[in-house]
Amino acid sequence: MKRRLIAPSILGADFANIGKAVDEIAASGADWIHMDVMDGNFVPPITFGAKMAVDLRGRTALPFDVHLMTRTPENHVPDFAAAGADYITFHLEAAIHAHRVAEGIHALGRKAGVSIVPSTPVSSLTSLLPFVDLVLVMTVNPGYGGQTCIRGCFSKVKELSRLRLAEGLGFLVSVDGGINEETAREAAAGADVLVTGSAFFTAADKAAFVEKLRG
Ligand code: DX5
Ligand code: ZN
Image 1: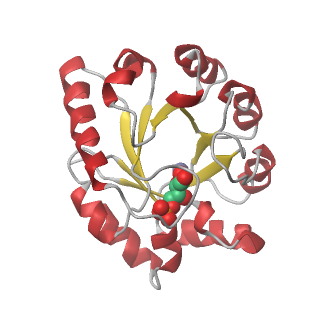
Image 2 (image 1 turned 30 degrees about the horizontal axis):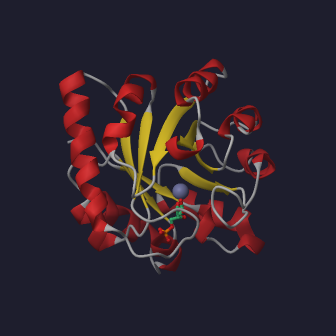
């Protein structure tokens, strides 16, 4: 079995100590740094922009997994690509020309991800699957950390794994929202990447937590 990747989200960190949080993620043995970019429009809160990635880039070699919860995601892609983001994921619900957004990310040498909120079915992105490197299945409604996982969304993980095999595609499947030791076990079938915010930052032993999450 492929090793699962663990992507702690800095949204769960103390924003007065983001650098320290990134050091904690690196020390825990986790694989990616997940960055939740919120614009106050696609989702109510505002978090941060590309300057956060620029300033953190020198601090760690871990891949940056940027999750754009913004309208007009194409407007933000160049800055995050220049900031050294490795994966740039946009929301299908926010993109008018999703294929163009994905190809725009690739044109800048970055991996393209697409995300769907709990109310969006997998069938709405099947035509996009050959053009993305990652599908991020939201297991909460985006906008806030610390919410309860909507377990019904895990069937989308299975559906995407089936489609990937059937179509011979190579995208990663990521789950995001309310992921803890318990829900990670349930998401096991097919999830390649687990995003974790509050559960990671409240774990007393972060390295042990990351190992448990890997399953
Ligand atoms: C929610 C974000 C998530 C969030 C996860 O809109 O996309 O990445 O930080 O946090 P938890 O694990 O607390 O649900
Ligand atoms: Zn996220």
